[in-house]
Length: 339
Image (cartoon, rainbow, N blue to C red; front, side):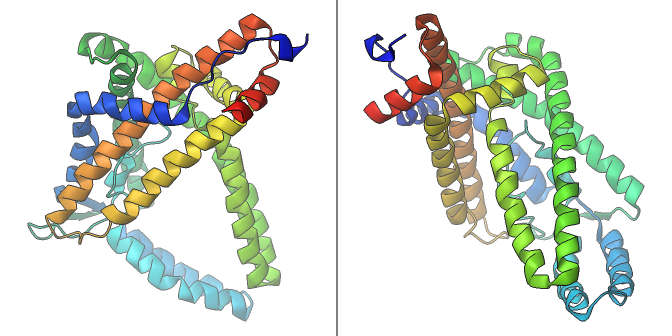
């Protein structure tokens, strides 16, 4: 078949998808309460710390570092301050920001230990089993609430309305499939992390510089592996797919529409990360941080809405191409150049 004889349907416009997504959230500002509520919990709520565990880890790390070359021991010693800060700031409640389905949060990247009212209550978790159990339970709660958030945003984006009846009826299904998807993600990245850690550690034994290069390469490879999975939750919410099928649909979508989907993802990253630099300017103990939290809630919810619109439009476009018998990778290349 000669593709030049086919009148191809118009592909989705990335900027239009983003604009439509934000327009939908402007009409349903109540959806901002999800990320707003999570950040307020992390700001004013109790903090579950792991300070005792970190202090014990630092002591053991000092003992082990004496068995390795001087360069490696020096790196371990320099990391003590980082671990000490982590022990002070890490709050297990950040697990409420579950992945890949979850409620967005600004304060998970800031980890505040102060607020305008003073200092929150700190509860220390002294043992590893307790920390693991708490994290698992908190993550599960975040995942379930994230399922409700994704369903509501998707309905607002696609149908321009939020009907809580159908959302609540479908809530158990999407929560269960999101849990399965999280398990798949965890297994996948655990394997990648183990391979990368072994490679980085082995190279560090020979040279600290080589170890740093290995870490950078590991980050690049991880991003390359993560890219096809960006839309893996969307099939669960938009098409009623099961977790594994939704993941495969995401891989297929990104492969067949690589250039256009890459543009959408890069714009989303630039918008979110660029604005995060502004949101994080306010001191953590100032009420100005509340403005940052509100801005972050609107932008992230708007981008999630835009992603559902783009996902729906790009799938509809691929189905139209399939009905015409057009080779989709070629059609993607041609329409991208034409636009």
